[in-house]
Image 1 (cartoon, rainbow, N blue to C red):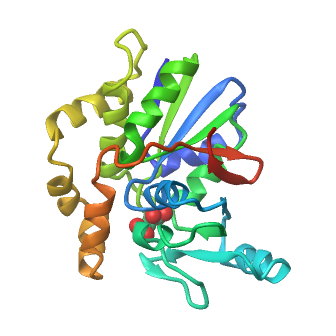
Image 2: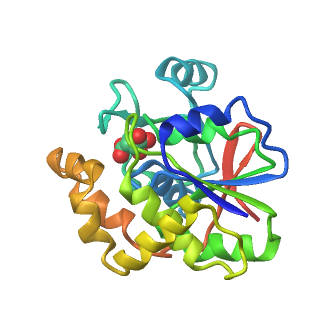
Length: 236
Ligand code: MLT
């Protein structure tokens, strides 16, 4: 069975639910999960998602070699080493990154007790589909991180694009059928759609148009991120 969680309100409830036997894939296409996958594709050692700025700073105090990454309102956080752009994550080979973003890292933390947690993005769609095809989880939960308190279209497009790559016999919830239909409507026109989403418009406004292009590259990387303990690493 495949279900898609479409809103931050639904995601918030997962923290208190038993997710034993569930494989979760978290999508924050613009931009947190795309940045994570990009980092892993460029040999970042691991990425530790944390809930807030103070937690990130405390980890840096303990280990000054870590890179602090993230955003608030789309902008880099004061005192942090990098923001939340995929291109920045491509320059961090061999480093451990501690990351806090508004929705993406929160969504990862909310389902961290699932049996498996993968990081979803358009940039590694085929690699993800391959893992799901090989492991055949009985319960697949696609978590669309959203923007602020709201649903966001780009995450649903990502979830739908993955569903469209999975075998037809996977049972789909109503939300999963909706996400797949949305993707069928979008087709290869991802970038154009991203430019019209709430998050896409906000990123364009702060001069991050290049990030939209990076986030719209389908299956650019053959890597899958998996949560192991408190860190996301490249799945072997
Ligand atoms: C988030 O986690 O809320 C997003 O990645 C925001 C952003 O695009 O920076």
